[in-house]
Length: 137
Image (cartoon, rainbow, N blue to C red):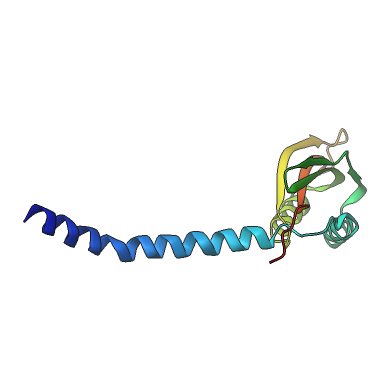
């Protein structure tokens, strides 16, 4: 009777596990879709510059660093700097998160303007990724 009761209990858990699996597969496919198969560094730099221009950020600097390759995945560190009002910079970050490419923000530094006119300088280090070892079926 205990074995039958356990089997019934386990079978009731199965739909929950299927739902969890479906959610994880969806999340994984979205994750992979946000890691392009090509480097596309120029496209990324252009997107960042456009976002900065949209938010009227000044003294823009976007500097890619030395690329790092791992098994099937490459990382490109990018240093981004600009100056503007804090609200403009936060709006920039909100849109940065909505890009169709996976971005990991490693570090953010804000420095208040020495004249205290309401502007801050922002420095951030981000990492973008692309897949290098694609297996086509």
